[in-house]
Image (tube, rainbow, N blue to C red; front, top):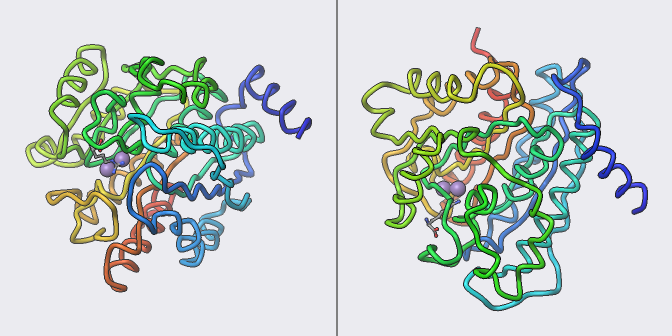
Length: 328
Ligand SMILES: NC(=[NH2+])NCCC[C@H](N)C(=O)O
Ligand SMILES: [Mn+2]
Ligand SMILES: [Mn+2]
């Protein structure tokens, strides 16, 4: 415990080395969080992705693989309030952040297997603590930038970006605010954020997105993919995120069309095709700058066995593309 804390402090002070040095190692971190949304089953995704042979697939791409196991994201505490399961989310995300910071400090690529999308509180904050110049690509049908006060659902998986962008007032959290105190020194600047895949945005979120765009975020929707094509949208998003420094990608499988990824909690029609999603991951790998990746919201309980397997296999395949698998 003391060693861990010391390592954390050292990592936060010295910053993790960049770019990743060879031989490259992937840390696989399971984050079986389910309290950010109401549907059971999303907590099984790390296990299912491992069973699908993820570690072997990655090893075949010439990475060393360090499976760090699952972070125990449960705590006994819980408090009522506008953010459901606030204490669970706050404390669980802090534990995940610590595990990710340690992996970054060892110079590893950090691959986090959610869990629901609230896990990005831990993964993005860790990437920013380890390497403050990290830029974030958010691939999602949803904008996930609700505050507890704007959220129509109270579900934390619709809120991680609001916390990371410092849009949440501590008064919105009431007695739960102490569970999020560890986020105080974390700030994602809007100009370091790009969205791809958006197509289901709440009324209040729309206002937030327009403000974020004014403040320098790259905000694209499926309309842009339709008009310009995935190549143009991804190139523009990556251009927006500059030409050096580490990238973090937070990939919500509901960015993909439910025809190819039916096993997810908040499926929305009109999403990325199989090739569009793979293209995005391949383009990320080709930058040579991807330092961390989340794959979230795979919930095998929400589809028939065929759809569940298709979704898990898709997620595993997208990880492979993001880690350098190429067609030719
Ligand atoms: N990570 C996700 N799947 N988020 C869905 C969010 C849905 C809705 N916007 C909400 O805030 O409740
Ligand atoms: Mn999401
Ligand atoms: Mn989503």
